[in-house]
Image (cartoon, rainbow, N blue to C red; front, side):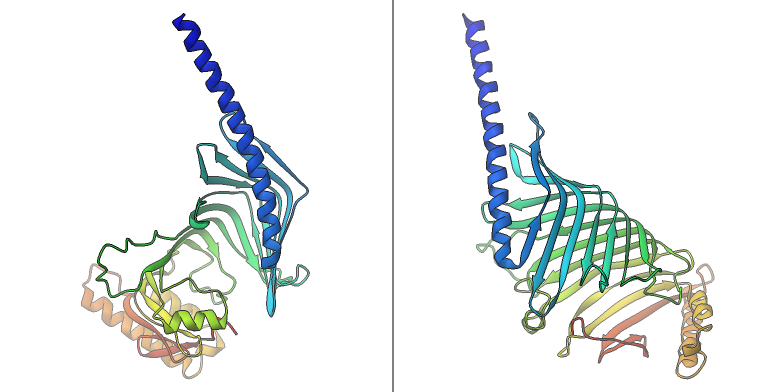
Length: 353
């Protein structure tokens, strides 16, 4: 008798789970269709060839073939995302956490024929967590292979063998707990790590042929996350918004850079900030830059001479056991200029025109 009761209970549990899985699959398909329709009012068009939900019994796999996402906005370049196949995986008992697999994707900013930026991404795996009840993004992580980017039809493209990207929005602080920190709350944390990076946007080759590793660790402070528009960025700046640069490092063997500091925007929306940097390979930088015409006349020649002088002084004071082409350097962004120590070396433009 007990065995029959146990078998009946197990059978009911199995049937209940089967019903629950198919019910959740139907809900996901319906909710996804509603969500896609809602995006049209926000200027986002989402199209795909077909949608399939599979994975029974352990998980739910939502597969989309020939996915095309286009975001348009007035006075802004359109953004297009194209992918031959994307699969979203979730588990019935933890539906707010999902895993994403993609065979690859292409992102265009501007028209697809002559874009201002074209980004190609190889095989990708990602995970994301969303607070479904409050419809709030919490965190996402991406691991992308064979990433390359460039503008227009340029034959020379920047590239990275692998890129890891982590984005997190911290939970809102408990209002009952006293807040004594002078800083505004952390709105978002971003960590990026890339290997075997070739950046064509830095044509002088100061990092050698490629950077072995690039790391960027940032925290955004402010009252709310700004849109990428003049009005929103101005409000973020005026209410005390800052970017805390926990670490930026570029390691290549030829030249290594480690930097930390803090930045914001000035009244013209140009970068404004101060950083402490440690640079290895000053002699390599001077050798590379001295071959360019801009540094063979004043003030370029004076800049190179001053960099070499500062690095030798710094190496001598540090001791004989350290490299003499190592330099501890204050880097600042102000008045629309990039300063290495007291030397202005580069003119900065606004982050948005």
